[in-house]
Length: 192
Image (cartoon, rainbow, N blue to C red; front, side, top):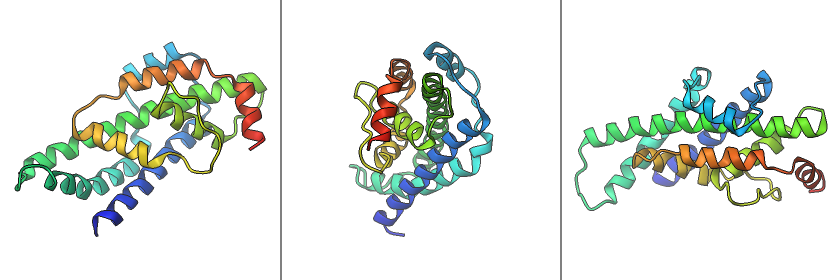
């Protein structure tokens, strides 16, 4: 498998994982009512067992990408121990990122449902959750059909590879979700 095919398969796997994670939240009815509640949930144990196969698929697909990145580094030979430990770190980052995305989606769904008194549109929840997760300071972009999966993939894989924690980003995203104007967003979404 060449690098381009590996990267494409990785982005597709992350997209499937994000869809499954958010769909699970929407189907179970689990909701987060405030950003503070979301932070408490993120501080607790993550229950991502149901998504373990999807997470494992992302990590397996990330290995060739990590190896390619490592080869491009200054070192000519990268020890397998380094690749293996980086792979474990990526797995932990993806698992944590999935949990952060689920909690954020639960808060977004709650905000939309509270405003309109009916179930939130799953596609709108996914779009808002991913956009807020990636850039909490920016107003979510509702035009276009694609989620920003390449950027989500890059965020999870690179944060795992370099050992960065995404909890600050998730906290800012929860705060931004709590301030969403659900009425305006739903109107923009319907008119697109």
